[in-house]
Image (cartoon, rainbow, N blue to C red; front, side):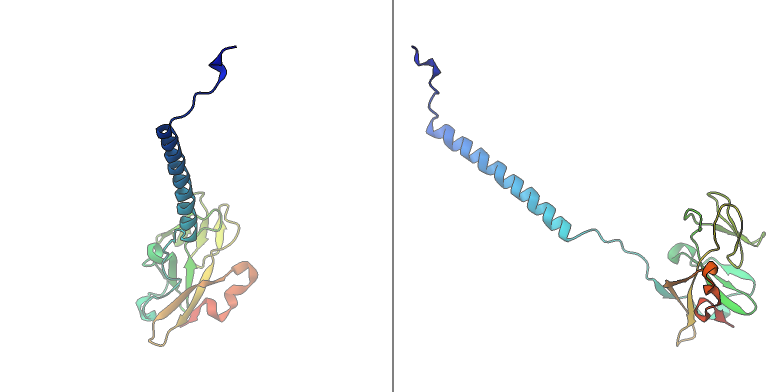
Length: 169
């Protein structure tokens, strides 16, 4: 019998090198897990515009016209009729696109699938299943319109008759 089957003894230097590599790998794995845990505890935060804002005095809005001043910043249209001011959402009730106000045709038209809404927000053409939503509007202490997007009013639920869904002028 030969002694070729016997494992060769590892040197002290080889053992230290192997042990160092194992510890470095262990520390790298623990550091990665710790980093992932800390990252989980501090998630990304999306900074959205405030849900309540002031939109100026009612006199700033012309009767029969739609104000698109807050469309991009807050996602609302402000409409003044002869008797009231109401605030419409700029989100189409079909698939969530943003319709455009066409002043010449006196309607909101969604570019995605062709839904049309009257100046009141009621849908009359295209695939939109229901009218646009309204937001709460009140008069603040300083005489400005105070719009609260956390409170929505839906036509099909009969909520447009709620006094908070419009401001009588």
